[in-house]
Length: 144
Length: 489
Image (cartoon, rainbow over all chains, first blue to last red; front, side, top):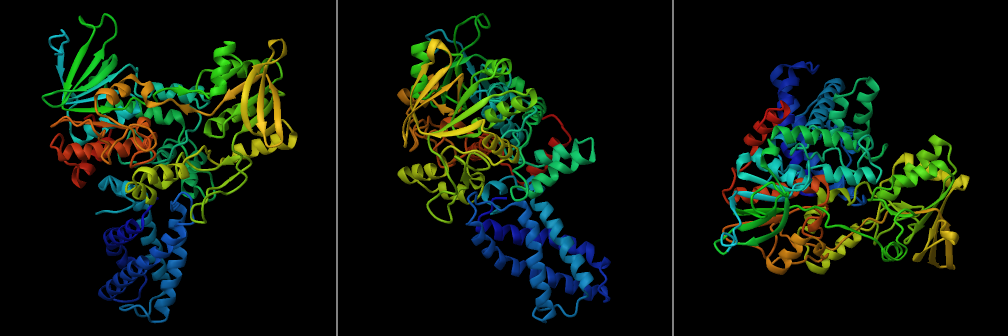
């Protein structure tokens, strides 16, 4: 991918909201949260929102790091690696009780939701999104 | 005037001149956007859109089975770039290894692997499928375009000389509101010393250009040991070196290679830590012929806003001769260096002369250590210089009579939407894409993806003018679905 800063932020917001939102809808009933479905949905969507908000902040750091690359690209592989730092930070914040709307979450449920959502969004960003938005890849990932 | 001259007039809504991959990609976009094939005319001398490109890649040592220098998502047969070449290569695999290899490659590029690049054959075959799907042959009219002139009443006349005997008159005039120029490389240019040698000694066999057929060099080296001088530090030099070394290994040859670098790159280079390009052992390394983000990212956005000198400077910084890092090439050259059959020389060539008794060629160089003479059996020029745009008659005519001008890099000046600046003929417009337009607001024009970006801009501009429907999310999805099922349009 060859994102610009605005492209990164827009892609993060749109894909997490739309693709991540749909995926959360599907996967939540299957998660081992140990809570009622309503409470589970409240938690999973709060986690998704936290990934989105924190993610926008992360994008600034990635954009800065990208400046050291001659090609000014962001290899596909980095899109997977960044799952580790983002997932870890969010988990620590959840454990510290710093994420609004998210209480005590079992690690297994968190991992399944976080990793699967990340993979689905990453897969969509690496191809299928271009089917719907044919100019997206020529605009550094901007939708508008 | 045209009618008075007895030239038959044929009406068309859109004429594209060239008929190579630039025309093909533009026609593909137009057809996918919803323009009927009957409204489009392709004027060309080529048998197929890829025939000229295939000829050049083949003689410069990229036959169908070898890999191009092109990104996985640069798919001239598919405007969406999805599924990419790597995914398609995986899906067509007949073994688990062949399935995993391209996917792993594209997943880990360029960190753990080299950049994935498609095989030339895959690009040509997929283009052929799309060519049939969109009814491209219906649009083609064979012949040589002499000129494109503005009409007083608006729009343009494109004057074509059809093949002898194909039509009752020697000329045909295509009248259209919109014209697209995609004539490809205006021609090949040799370095002055090579040109002098060719003209003075009339010897095209020992001093060859890599873009010309030069198979005889490899054949002769297979018959008896010899020394080859390679000139240039780009992708073609890399490919020619690979061929020489492959032959050396495969046939047990004793070929000696002397590689002449005019500029020897010793390591990472650039003005600051945010603009450092990798390099070493003489070469400047870069995945593609420009940094990747010129095709859609930061550099594309940046250069779109640059004018004049600033733009020329940016081109200079990003450009320069370079080649990709490929593990095979790195290991082959390392072996050559350690075994002593691959040597590099840094300097400027002043002259070429035939060797004693007309045997071989002597290259005279000016180096930092003083003058140097290198004897070799062959010289392969891989510098790949392009001729001035005036070398092409259509472009020369456009500059003399059509109002076209030059951009800061000296090529055809086009706007952000690829309209040729100065050639407007209300309500018509003239566009251009490809190599002739290098130096504009968008770099990377002479590549598969560059041609697609240009085509996208042109079609979006035409949609604004009402020539074709606007192409939104619904149309895009519907058309992709048709493409995926190989449904004709």
